[in-house]
Image (cartoon, rainbow, N blue to C red; front, side, top):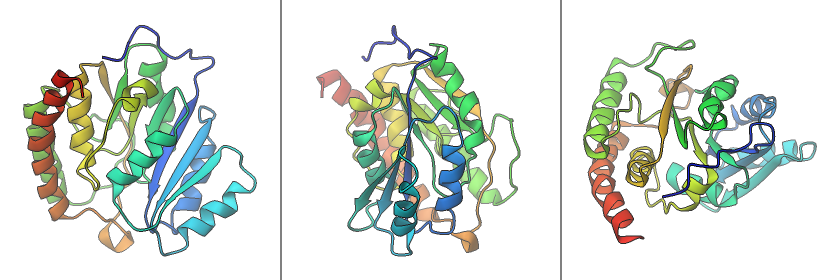
Length: 249
C-alpha cells in the first residue's frame, strides 16, 4: 500500500489538474480560466479526446500565454476513462485533481477539496453533491435516483460509505494513481476508481461540492446506458481490484 506517513508539504505541494474534454468548445475556455485562477494549481493537463468542434484549437491558443497549461490529444474519441489514464500518466504534481471540462463542478471548491490532503488526513478525496455545501442546480429526478442506486451498489462491493461515487471531482496523492492501471474507457471509470481505491485500503475523505448540472440540450453526455455499464463495472472491479491487489498486480 502507498505510504500515508509523508503527506505533501502544504507550503510546497504541487497540484496537477487533469481535464478530460470531448467536444467542449462552448465551455473549455471559461473552464480553464477558472481553473488557472486558483492559486493552488501548478499544472493543468487537458486531454482532447478526439474532439471535432474546435476544442483542440481553443486550448492551443490559451497555451501561448500560460506555461502551466499542457495539451494531450487522442486521435479519436476513446472515453473519459481513457482520457484520465492519459492525464494521470502525464501528471507531475504531488496531488492530482480531476476536473470535468463542462464546468458542472466549480474550481472555487478546490481549497476545500485539498484541505484533507494538505493536512495529512487523507490520501484520496472524493467530491460529493449530496453532503450539502454550495449551490445545486435542480435537474433530473431519475438521474438522482440512479446515482443513489449506483452509489449504494458500489458501497456494497467496496465496503466504503461514499455518498456520491459518480461525482466528478476526485483528488489523489500522486503515489496512489501511479500504482493504478485503469481499464474502463468510458464513464464506468468512476466506480472503477472507487473499487481500486478501496482495494488499496488508503484513507478516503468526502467533501461537499457545488453542482451546476447541464441539460442534454446544453451538451450533457451521460445516458441510461452509462448507468447500466456502471453497474457492470461495480461488479467487475469490485471483485477484480481486490484480487489484483492480493496477487500484487
